Length: 337
View 1 (cartoon, rainbow, N blue to C red):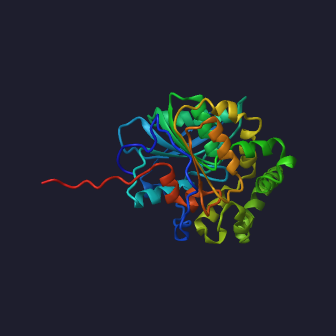
View 2 (view 1 turned 180 degrees about the vertical axis):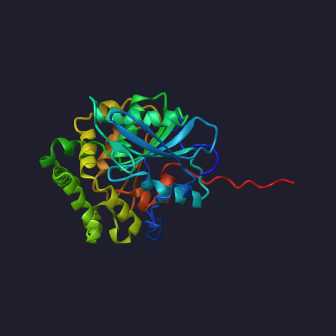
View 3 (view 1 turned 120 degrees about the vertical axis):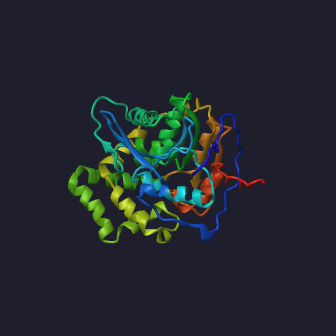
C-alpha cells in the first residue's frame, strides 16, 4: 500500500474481456481482520442528521487524490482487508486508501433524521468524509450497495470522481426486484427472499436482531449465507463471524430503499470517468445482463466476469479483482552504484 500512482486514469478505455478463469487454490485465500493497525489506518468520523460515517485511512502521499472503499450491505471496512492484504503480498500500491463504515454498518450510525433523499444523504456524507481528510479527488471502489453509491457519486460529482471500480454493484436487476418483487422472484430469488426475511426481522425490533445473530451461535449462519459464495464451506470463519455481526435487519431494509425508484440508465449515462465493473459467475445478486446494460450506456467501460466466484469477489478472488481493476506490482528499484 506504499507509494504513489493510481490504477485508473481519466481517458482510459477498456474492452470487454473473456471470463477470468481462476485457479481453485486461490479461492478465499485470506481471512478478514478487524485490526486497523495491521494496515496502519487512522480513524476519523463525520456526522450529519442522517447518520455517521467512520473512516479508517492511511496517507501514503501528499496527493489530494484518494482510493475510497465503499462496502456493501451486511459489510463494513473489514470487507476489504483480504484485498488489501493481497495487494501488500504482491507489492501492489493502493494510494491513500480510505475505508469507510457507512451509516448503519460497522461503527457507522444510521439515524435517518430530517428530510433526505437517502442515496444523496449517504453520498454527501462520503464526500464530506473524504474532504475532511483533505482529499478532493477520488478513485471509488465499491462492492454491491457500495458500487451503487460509487456510480451515483460519479454521476453527481464528475469534478471529484476520477474513476470507479465496482464488484457486483447493485444495479438494474436488484432495482427491478425492489419495485416488482413477485415478477422478479424467478430472476433473483435469493435477493427477494433475503429482503423479505430482513423486513420481517426489522419489524420485530431488537428481538429480530437477536434472532438474526443467533443463527451464528447455532452454527446455522454459514448455511444461511451460502448462496452468496461459490464455495461456502471454504470461506474463512472470520468472514462468517463478520457477517453475523453485520446482520442488521433495519439497516438492510434501508439499504434496499436506496435503490427503489432509482433510474440508473439516465443517471449513469452521464458518467465520463473510467469505469471497471466485475461480478462473479455464480453471483446471486448481480446478473450478467447488468454488465451488458452498463456496457450499453458506457461502451468504454471495462466489464469482466470472474470465474468460480459468488457475490464477494474481493474475498473469494482478491488477486483476480486487483488484476481486473488494473493494479500492478510496483517495479523493484535497484540501487545504483
